[in-house]
Image (cartoon, rainbow, N blue to C red; front, top):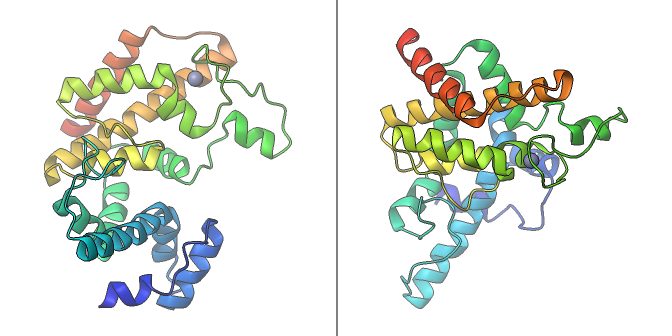
Length: 247
Ligand SMILES: [Zn+2]
């Protein structure tokens, strides 16, 4: 099988994006920058494809269809064959990811921001420190004294969690509970949605990250931080505005 052929040649021991990218380049023989970009950004998906392949082997050999815990591709974290098939649809999910990102209903500057975020290229305190720039290190949006990484600021921060809970419930979305990074929240939550719902969810998640980032910058640089209720209102109204304007 086409997918099996490629999966079987990629070792689980690869844990850096560059190694995975190089392996994909060798296997697929492509120098297409768009494909390269997509594959690099979706290396997490690659790992899930490999994990899914192993999972299918386990299911086939043991005839065991018990729910599997920690499956992060469904809203309730319960393994389903349907969700696994979607992960196994390698070319489908890659092209879908690419298309959703660049065609989302949002201004170009927000799409670019979201693209940088997915590549972990935003100048968070962690990334500033990596470059040797002065940084305050701890997140300014919560009391956890956690290092300000992108995944903390937008996913695991109590401030971000509260905002995501409120904006999601406004549109009746259920964020994937086990997702621990920006890309996983986006793709896992969108997995079981219709195409139309997924487009709305993509805009909403980009608007959420965008306005969290704006408030974070305002808090750091001018000491001003809006109440959560106001930020939620701004995210919801901004998302609806983008949907109407770019329909
Ligand atoms: Zn925080």
